[in-house]
Image 1 (cartoon, rainbow, N blue to C red):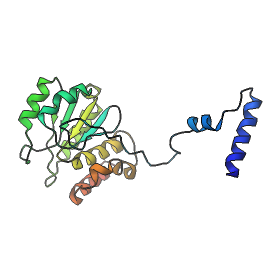
Image 2 (cartoon, one colour):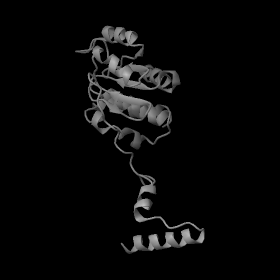
Image 3 (cartoon, rainbow, N blue to C red):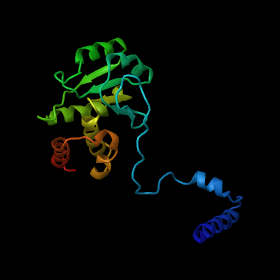
Image 4 (cartoon, rainbow, N blue to C red):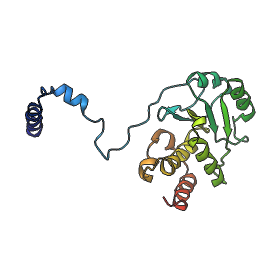
Length: 198
């Protein structure tokens, strides 16, 4: 408490020196940065789009989620998304790539299908994903799989490879989506990053 009082007094003195009235404690708190340097990123905002499981808005340009219904396309379009990346294989239970593709076309939403099977991971799918997310034509973008686990690992790779994040920070950004990620998928993600010098 003494440090805070000293800080406020010092700031008031400096403000007088430059001819400005001192800010109140409430004004100082409002002007303070939301997070101190080096802090862990805030949890992504979760909102809801009907028909999209585990919808998580990561930032103004990207959102992640699990399975979605073809009926959700109009809501996805109304939410402002220009494209969808689907990481589900057509053979997955509940996946209906054909219906999603048609619904996306009908809603004028770009549909990018990159089937990624955890049991036989294909690094070229990650490469294609990185190209798709980097292309401004595809933004804003919704990225989905069945539950959100694959999406969380692809997103972590994007954060490291394109945004320059440290691996630890990127791997922890989407805890709700990544909590059930299998050990092989996590190992694949870390190996991909290591092979690319990260």
